[in-house]
Amino acid sequence: MSKTELEQDKLVDDFLRQENLSDASLEECETALDHLIQGIHGLDEQVMAAVQTRLDSLTKPQGSLGVLEALAKQLGGIQGQPWPEVQKKAILVMAGDHGVVAEGVSAFPQEVTPQMFYNFLGGGAGINVLARHAGAEVICTDVGMAFPLDPPELMAHRIMNGTHNMAQGPAMSRKEALLSLLTGAKIARQAIDSGVNVLATGEVGIGNTTPSTAIISLLTGLPPQEVTGRGTGLDDEGLIRKQNVIARSIAINQPDPKDGVDILSKIGGLEIGALAGAILTAAYSRVPILLDGVISTAAALIAVRICPTARFFLIPSHSSAEIGHRAALEQLELKPIMHLDFRLGEGTGAAIAFHLLDASIRILNEMATFESAGVSGKN
Image (cartoon, rainbow, N blue to C red; front, side):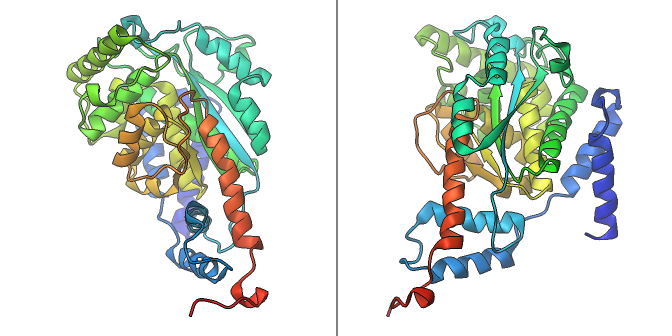
């Protein structure tokens, strides 16, 4: 690192190490985010070329292992080394509630959010099972649920008790949006400092497909009717109501499509912001981050709108059953590595994708070359 980069890293580190980020002013939050963005740089092209040379020398037709080869090359470019490693994995599950549920956009009551949060902590949810299978840690953070938790320490990172109803005005203030981004950045930084070198996104929050779809609609330019899914299982009437709520929320709030923080504050969610902040920190720290479903990908749209270079650090784990997810991935110019028909969220698709990352590294490290195996190459 240069002297300037070291100074910048110290500024970011000092800010994120604060015990209570909410004590910072709006200006301090804006400055911290700017420093984070300035430290994000692209992939190492030289290393990627070296990885490609190695892949092309292995005992197989060039490119015949498709996604595994692409992952190995991307991991090399992210980590800046021709022999990339997957050492310690973590899934960041961010939790938040949404005032827009008052509009009848969810088939489940908001009380489910804390109930599922406790289930995550107890290890009984789908994400816990799949994370254990993948050898990954699940890190759960309440950034904005509506109900109190016991013990109160579980609310240490809570910014507010759920967002406001975005169908009637902004979901949150600009400072609250910045705090959600920086809190996610802080959680990701702590995980990376503990030795995690591969992250994944997860979430929980009843009603969160509504703000996610609003973000996707705004940033893709597609009408709500073309990107709105049924979420937790809405009937036809509920789906139409949800589409209308999304259209009304965008019309009332008029978010600036060029300003990711403005979009987040007006039609976003606290857990969406936290995931976007985690993505930015992963890119800043040169750590790959696996995207899960529609909520995670809406967060990625926010992160990439704030810092376009962050896109190169994203690995889209799967294409979910939510129609807006496909549109969001296309907007990001990302191709999902699996098609699983998942629509659970939590980080479940990302947890499955950990296995493909492991496989890509093993292929690169363990497969024989034509020369070492004495196998004749292509004429």
